[in-house]
Image (cartoon, rainbow, N blue to C red):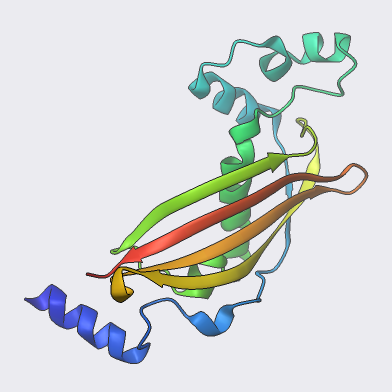
Length: 170
């Protein structure tokens, strides 16, 4: 019963749900992060990666790479590092900007376009923009679409990410 009352109160603050829909088109502050070799190795080990290009710097250099490459799913690590940096600087991330209520939050679709490799030692900048909001099931589910770019100063965009988060309200 308390849970229902809380949902109704929150809904009255924003009649279309919990997300702050006036943030459509807004972006969070860009963050530049250093890609540390240790994080790449640990993440690769967690994934069970055996390709030496992801775990052995000497083998990567023999293959004419500057260092070990980050595996494609490393985007989530970059995003987590950026979140830590924003928190350290007292800035909000995308989840806070749009008003995610983690009690009702679920992950929807995730799409990634990898346009270039990221290597240990790189500095990359991540930017995230609020693209859209929509509802389903008569407002019982509300969605936010976020798009992020990971960019290297010389090599340009390396990752394009499009993610959908949702609140299950009913």
